[in-house]
Image 1 (tube, rainbow, N blue to C red):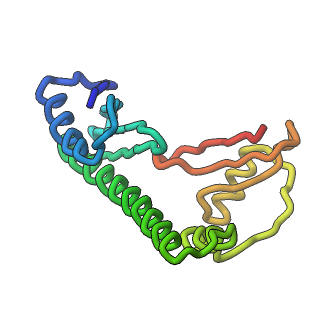
Image 2: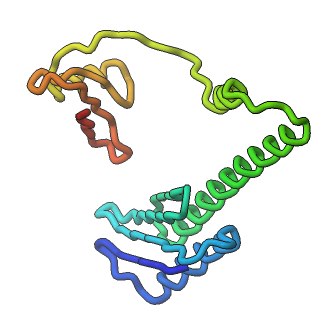
Length: 182
């Protein structure tokens, strides 16, 4: 595994780099047969003293990403390593389940139909509620007010200036974001 460790408002000491490589390096056992795994680690320290670690591992057919905030940077590294390991195990379980299902289908000599895979996907991603509403033209400030009045984390609206669909959302840091559709 090749590591790219960067620090923002923080000097990455050799001990910190070594700890990151040790903890994230334990995940290498899951990457058998994958050459040149690049690990991008971004360490940040905020004014309130909290540290944040973001780890991104792009591998073929999967992007692993986790982030964690904690007062202790070493504890944050531990938490991120645990998150990444859970993601890898979840992905491997899905892949293995699909392989077993395919093997069963071949053994039974049953024809593979599109409907069967669609039913399988419905079990994984079940839509439990559908809402219909018309998008009211407004500016982003009014949309944020509406979102807060409703107590939601996001709000979809038509931008009065551009006449395009936009989404405002509340970020983890308490600030707001805007998504503009093309």
